[in-house]
Amino acid sequence: MAAIQIKDVPDEVRDILAAEAKRSGKSLQAYLIGVLEREARFARNREIVAQTPLPGANLGMDEIVAAVREARGDSGPETESGVT
Image 1: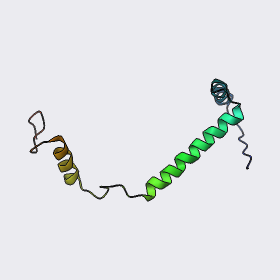
Image 2: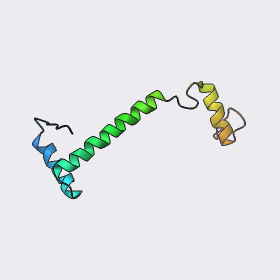
Image 3: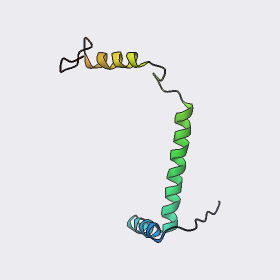
Image 4: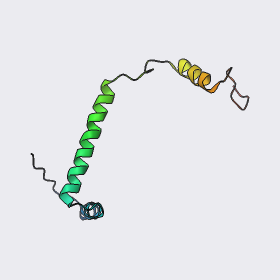
């Protein structure tokens, strides 16, 4: 496993992280490893989302509006207030 050293951490940040670690019943090191692991998972998720086309990603605004109206049961371009 790799070792990571972070320099110049402001005292206030260190104190907050230490308090959160204590609240979680963990050492500061264990708490920070959890934070780093969570961030790594989020980064991986962002990569997956960026590479995966979403359903309907190529729809135009008119098609989206029509689909929303259909889902709501709207019959025309008027809104509930009667304004188009």
